[in-house]
Image 1 (cartoon, one colour):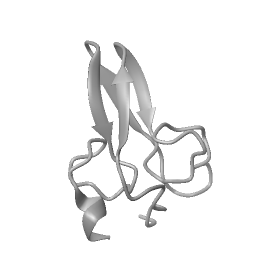
Image 2 (tube, helix red, strand yellow):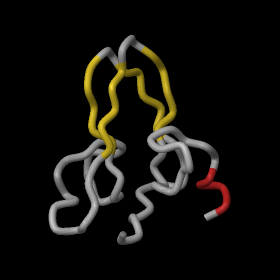
Image 3 (tube, one colour):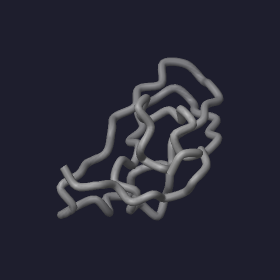
Image 4 (cartoon, rainbow, N blue to C red):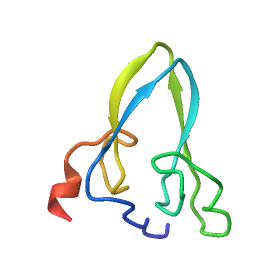
Length: 78
């Protein structure tokens, strides 16, 4: 699998309403941390994120978290 592009070296705070979201896994999206379709042809695709109830969260933007799509602090080591 190709290596993702680091979109940012810090997480994105998001206040998410219930619903389905597509988290950008490739790092190429201009709508970080969400997918805008820029991955097409990269060999990578987005991760589906189901949010059952409204919540505040921190989404990974370095694309190297071991707990995707959530930030686990990996960006501090890159």
